[in-house]
Length: 526
Image (cartoon, rainbow, N blue to C red; front, side, top):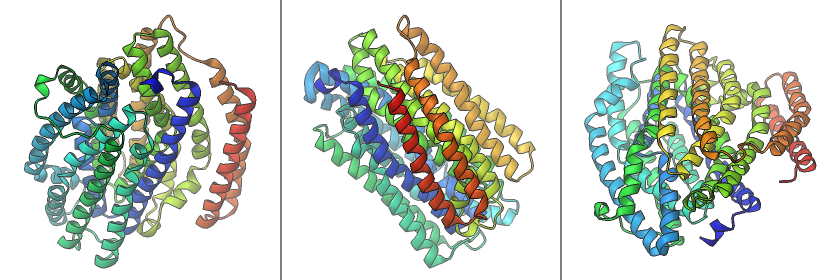
């Protein structure tokens, strides 16, 4: 607890850098996973079904707890550590883990029973009845094979939250890279053995079995690494089924139940978007890749800051120290904006060469590069807005407030449903896909506004913003714009050469970020 009590701007910045560094490894491999799947499976209806289908266990996990798990569990463990030491924290963690595993077992059984219904939604976009029927059968088999991943995701994220509560962030942020690498290898081997670019009429059952089993093994290894990390911080314990007898564990589980909408509505929204995108050949790849880029950027910027800041925010809220809480909030918001702004500029200006690099293999000739570039331009803005939403949501959960984050998620889901309904009226081409990604940006905007209005009220009379840091970030951003513009100009001269685009983005991004950091250090002293 002493580390939390003495948390300084330097500590927060160092922990944020740790999360961002390992998160970059994790999210880069996650992005590569989507790219490889698209390159191997191609712009086919089977690829659409698999892109969404293998994501189902993660979506179901989000319905149970998702990102809320850390927001609720970390403050609970922090408070237990302060009140009763590591032994008491282990008891609370055991009770919460037991409850979560019991819930996940029931959910897995329901998912298996409802697998034909899930498969039906995954194959709605297939126009041919015979192909749709076979696709539905293959998707049902896939869902049955990957359903156990729900429990494995529970174990992985409980382990990550336990490490975060103890101020350890590296393994918690980077372990999912192993999951991504295993799945990439599985897809490459399966594509090499069974063939690439196969659609539902020609997909053998063996290919579905290999992909399903390989992805489940990958998640199991991820969970094992997170449990190893939990043991290293002294919090590994057997799950307990007696959570009702533990007042603190019961309080945490009740808060998880009350907060289920915070995770459930975004999960439902993404499923709606993926399903509608499946009506366009290769559409699931474009929308999911855009989603992956969005959260990859957020994870190495604003989300990294929020993970690092949450224990300190929770400790200040527990002590009812409003001055420290307000200071920690301003510090976290400033760091989040500082980390997000250069990413916005780099991606927005260079979305076309980035899309040219990401579309590989069977997707090169599918006329998807233009729509993907437009989607990435929208994502550049969405990652900043989504990062501010994440920071505000984490701050409210540190204060044990879940009502407003739930309301924000509900409103955001409504925006996505309306936008998806409009998208169905658009032509089944790139315009439909771009509109779906615009829906993500719109939902993040309304959610961020809802959360920030509430947070402003609870922080009063403390200052809400640290203007010096924000102004410095804007100045540094303007300083890097000429470099980003030069990158765009050179990209227009290379004729779409992907190797040249990759070299240009690598060298140009390092140069632009260097300018940004130098100017920022010159004009701002935290």
